[in-house]
Image 1 (tube, rainbow, N blue to C red):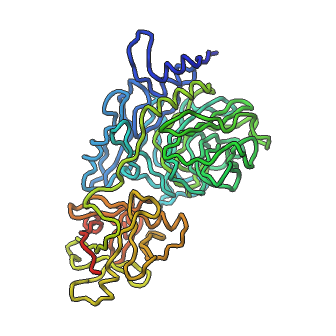
Image 2 (cartoon, rainbow, N blue to C red):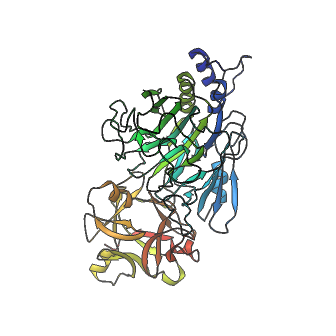
Image 3 (tube, rainbow, N blue to C red):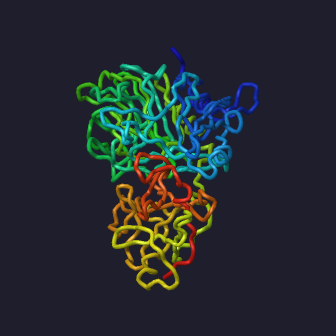
Length: 506
């Protein structure tokens, strides 16, 4: 048995004050341990979650030669060494291949294998996340989160020390409260070891999104709910819990915890304020949830059966042994707030000006007289010059707009078809009228960066940041570096995705 800390002791833990009077910056897992509910899994690409941790946070693999690099904290208990990643990944693409477990149990997260729902890759495995899709700062220092696009997922089906059966556990995650959808299921937590749905109560994971197929909270979402398998629960049943609010914070702290016939949902603004309890009570009355039959695997970004249609962004999270006290979780929230998560630029390279007209010239040796243009709805490249027809000049000109899906990036409106924008659909680039939907707006949002071949800009998709504007046989796609499609071919990738941007022809 253990004694849970007093509220005063919990506050001391959050500040990191020890008995000698010296100041030690306790990490979330130090706080959980002092509360008698130690971390059995601790994942973050942004910072160390123990005050003395100096080991690996995550691994990246670059597209140019397939080599990998391990990213560690800048100092013990500190923020990730983003400059090391930036140097390693310069002039190429990088993927996050491993998210290391800081608890010492080896519960690392890697590319999720096939499950009840097959993965999107040709071998059934899920996609890996871009290493640059989710930049943030912590106390002014740059770091990168894990940007999960539909089809992306991480998993460990042989975890050690995680709760099984009806054993008690807790978990929290820091997420992007603006990046979500209604797909199944953006989860972090405990799942099946087989990657298949094995029945009610075989999961216990944090869910974040606005899916209403099983349950919901108040308003239109998104909500923090619990994925307990065959149900996203906001309270005591698969139904609406008016006490589970829609969340709109840029950074969200999400908490789920469970023990025999008791569980809770808590949440907060991860940048300020304290945790609120949205549900605390008995397990759902439906068959299979009391007692629970947790299996102990760990998932990120997917459902227990490898459902892969969700999206979201993960910065840090842990799973514990035992049911944490509210006071312990309150101290963890204070620690998260003290980390000072903040947004930073999503773009780099030559700057774009909203409202300006631009044209984009290919830089591949074969095609330096060709510009990004369109024929009807198809985006392609065409030879354009000052002597071209007015119609062609207009087709090769684009008005820069603030990103329809994220104003930190950009959208490109057709000059000759006002109200229509470049968007991706099934990985092809099209010119479509703005229909006002969230999906259209996200598909039409792109983030320029310095050109991968050293010229101009490379323009990556905001909601699929592994994918860039690429011309292939004079047709435009959002392509990944060495992916499964023919237009993803690694040969000449850097040249094909680099564009010199100039004033528009029209």
